[in-house]
Length: 116
Image (tube, rainbow, N blue to C red):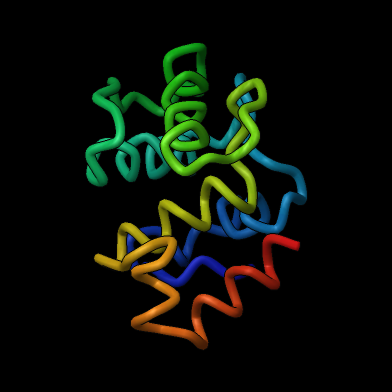
């Protein structure tokens, strides 16, 4: 699944994480990708965290908050296909769930297929 938001679409590490190759986890070495992830979480209003490029326990907790808010299986706070996909939609001022299905059936279908 390709990330589409111009906010982070050019970051190769995030694109790989969005395909779970591999997801981003605590101690992620790519500080630029972590900074973008942290800023995305802050920009979407899901959590208030320090944007410092360090994927530590607070960043993992913020990713778990994304997972919790959107009824995903909560893991150790890894940012992969589902978490990044939701953030990507939100960064594009998009809708999720039933709002997405009613307003953009093509994208909704693509997101469902990508998540399977």
